Length: 117
Image (tube, rainbow, N blue to C red; front, top):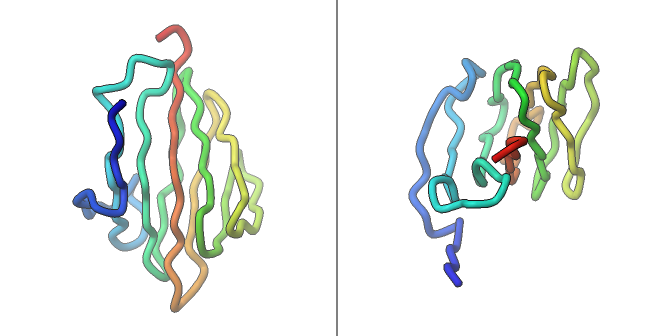
């Protein structure tokens, strides 16, 4: 069984979906998956950075907040999120995430599932 430690994998720095600043994305699993999961990413949002608003097609994403706090916007509704929160981003929905802390990182695990895969 393949085991990966996401803390030891090299992150990619990117302005994710045209968000504010650079976030760190670690591609934990992607091409190796044969399940309905399209990918598993470990993502770190430094203080005051964001994942910009974007819309998906016929897939859904789960954001699992591992550490930190921020504001999640799903289909226009903003909600505060903290460690332990799990957010469902439904098919054809829009969403964005902002780290509201000026000193702490916001760490999330992102999983995307595609129907019919």
